[in-house]
Length: 315
Image 1 (cartoon, rainbow, N blue to C red):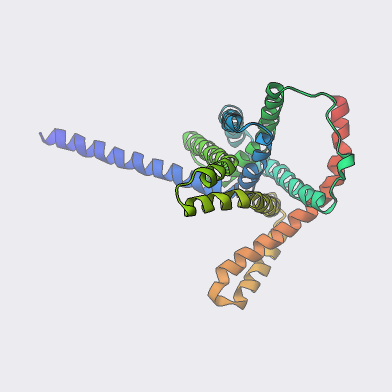
Image 2: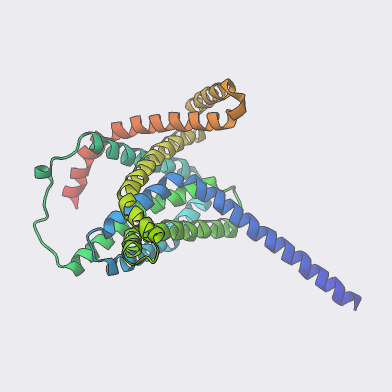
């Protein structure tokens, strides 16, 4: 009997360790996923445009197809690559992060550039071929999955860099949780966004009470403004996260000066108002990182404009 009790104690102890390990993996995955906020917000802001113009009954199936492609990108392609980098080429993570940070800065700066310099309607190129709805949907889904691959690569690289050096299984589990969790978050949000106007229209037309009908009308009227806010927040987040990645990655490869200067400025600003010192420090650092991200992004626009035609000719 005593042997059985001892065995049960051992099993309970192992279960506690296993539970703690799971909690640790989930906790580290949550922290790593939070580091990818800029790419996540941009993903949620960009994806709805791929379902615009389709009939309401095709919106959710299209979102589901893109989400499946996103899971494939993250789990089947990018997760093994990330684990291989961690195991065999950890030195490459910082340069890859800088490339990803530069991409975020470029994307954010390009959006701002187009806002300030809109293309006249007559200058917008038109497609030479007119596709039927099925081919158009196929092209839209493929384009969305390609865009997702770039953003997913950035998310997985950021998450990998944010994880502490641990065993292979720990990193694999944490990255898998990040991949699935962020995909559910992004495409669940996208599904809600693209169907919100339909829900609002239904409430406005079929609501049993004046309150319900008024709420539905408010949703319909508010969605265009909400989308503009989402795009603005996504752009700001890209510049902030991109600039932050560049500054931190420079420190990782031996150029810590910019990071120290930004930290000192943020601390000095925080000391001005002790009651909200932490918030002021974080805000100051985010603003400076965002400004640096904008400068880098604007500098990359002509570079990308010159290089892109070369790749187009080569393909």
